Length: 351
Image (cartoon, rainbow, N blue to C red; front, side, top):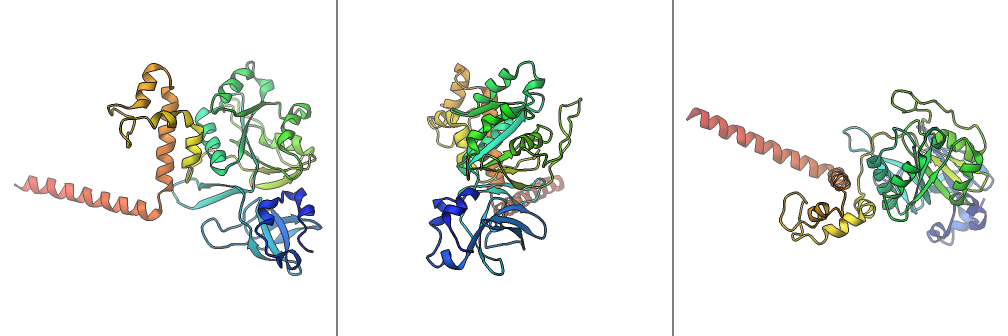
């Protein structure tokens, strides 16, 4: 087995990866793509190969192989030698209070942001997913499912389209192959798409329709809140009849943004442009004089709710992107301040 870029193209290989190879790599190594990550092994595919290998780790927090990655292996022993530089990477801080980085998927071309035409539709959550896509340099497409259960699916589509200039929005019945067929425009030979969205929005049904097979178990929705039962438990790369590849991701109800400054700026580019004209460079857009953002809100140019969401996401991203050492330093300084205040208070009581 050697590296043949033309044969690898159907698996998503492109010149970005070829440019990373040394001359000897073509004859001495083989290239494979990671299709699934399990606790004790990786599933891989390539020309004439589909098997499992031990997990692979390289240096750095982002060094673990994840779904969609390309690995170079020794052909005979299938021993991983190198993780190729990614074209794109989705990541997040794991849910909860920890700081561990969780890799979601690599080398994705298009992100299908799946939500439904019911109570799951949440503008703030969609903006988070859009920021993820923009930071990674991936094309976002909002896919509105359960259109057949809504009396006004066009209202959901209109609101979604207004979240970003030039945003692609598709409204589908995830069970209908003819309607879902519109999504194949992003699923051509070697193209990789990923799906994200809350549990119960129809991602599993959509995958089954796109792949033409009942590969994923599906669950119904609860009538009280229109939310679904979680059916997908791990990320996996699925081959599509159109020649593309699709990454499914478990429902993520809590997304902690990190290292997404430019992605947030892209999603809220209208606000960022106006904020750049504020009188003070460090304007917090609260009550400062000469705040262009507040002036735009007063004139109706900016939606105050959208501005609040922007500020919230920007603050969250800055907090999560701070290093653990920085957070510890801040906590230590805060602790010292509290002790100093308490000491002064006790001293005054003793006077």
